[in-house]
Image (tube, rainbow, N blue to C red; front, side, top):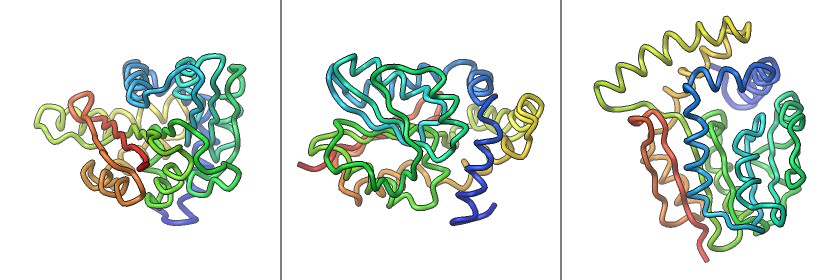
Length: 234
């Protein structure tokens, strides 16, 4: 798998290619459970009506729209992604309190410091080589006491869910994704990227050393999904 700048270009081009089928495949691969996981991420973000939220690697806007509903008409959400095609799909389902921007999650040069109540990223962290830069930027953008939330796929440790993961993600998902999207390489990348990603405890350490405290993480779906939350130091 490519690294650094080459990997960023590879991932961007991959998401541009599969954007049109991304939501359908998410629903099929998770049996619709991604909606439940989104709701849990919104809940731990602890948003209130009128708050501002930042959603990085927002893709087609699934979590972004849930955040927008949580903050209501008096609040706002900014969704950032580096794939123009993913943003085009997201913008096709507009909400008045969402603004989408093309950008790099590790260099949010147009986002003022301490301007959001919460920042989120779902299923995007494992695509970002520099996790310190990612969480440093997320911590910079939230207010003191603001929440940083990360939702990500991980490898389950239990025998039962480990066996299921090995069959589903390693074998079925690449074939299913290839048939529906026409791009099997993109869906072979999914299990590869999860295998290479840091363990939950290590990710919590990265969040802590980048300005976040009280970092907590939960296993969902038998450990196939991990949900992390940290709070910016006051």
